[in-house]
Image 1 (cartoon, rainbow, N blue to C red):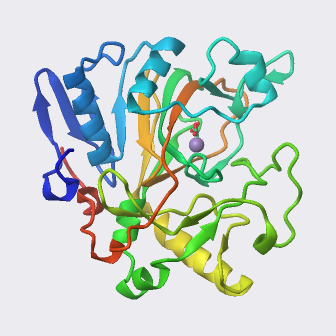
Image 2: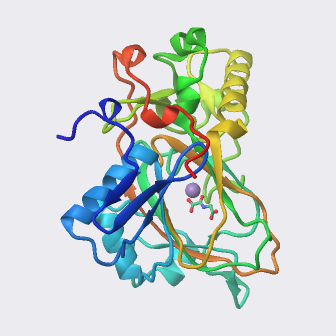
Amino acid sequence: MQAPLASRPVIHGQVGKVEILPLRGAMGAEIRGMDLRRLDDEAFGVLYRAYLDHLLVLVREQELSDADLLALARRFGTIEMPPVTAEHVAHCRDMPGITVVSNVKVDGAPIGELGDGEVIWHSDYSFREITAGMRVLHAIELPPEGQGANTEFCNTYAAYDALPDGLKRRVHGMTIKHDTAYDTNRNLRRGAQEVADVRLSPGPSHPIVYTHPETGCNALFLGRRPKHYVNGLSLEQSETLLDGLWGHTVQPRFRIAHEWRLGDVVLWDNRCTLHRRGAFNPGGRRVMHAAQVQGQKPAEAPDALGRPPHPRAHLFDDHG
Ligand code: OGA
Ligand code: MN
């Protein structure tokens, strides 16, 4: 067992040739001097610790085959298989577990998912009973600079910690029903029915407060905004509470934007973060390969109200 995170300082410094540089702003660290194809146990330990401490890790200039990417993801846990779509069947036959995230089309058919439209704030697979843990993206092809294909991330430990005490007590024990009918591009999923009344929509219920199973700290777990419902409330109360929680959570002070460079590997913890991407110029080609591991069924600890904040809930602005 590792020491509880909250009693440790945030790692910031050097282990051998490997440097861990916290990113400016709400979350994240860049690791330098690491080849993700060759991680011995010590190097993986540094990477994993940085992932728990900083929520997101960036490693630049990586050359990874799909097999390398999958091998990296496997070190974090059990590979979570993506939903089966026509794109997967066509392009991921040889490497199950790898997802292509792209707007590129070949003979009119998309080679990957998410296209070039807006991808709304979400955490991966929050619409499943077992939600995602780590997800990793590797940038293989990018549109020209300045074409708006950055990915934004939000620190939901910090958002939880900054809630007024009264609201923390109010949401303690509450659950949200996470809609499964719509995807992150706001389209109905294959075979799903339009949702007329969110109280009756299909989807798993998860606690609003997710006590992270490894760090022991609380994060807000909101999944996606549209069609979600706070169990037990009237429709109006639920909408008001969700709007309030979302307005609070996605404030700029809890967010970072990642500007991609070719070869970047970004991996993040879906248990304590949200992410989104704006629409970008359809003329540019963007190709990322991704993999993810299973998390757990989200749970709130009975003593959640007494838990210490995650060290990165204290926002720091400048690490030079
Ligand atoms: C994802 C995702 C956004 C992006 O791969 O899970 O949400 O910027 N990607 O491609
Ligand atoms: Mn995602």
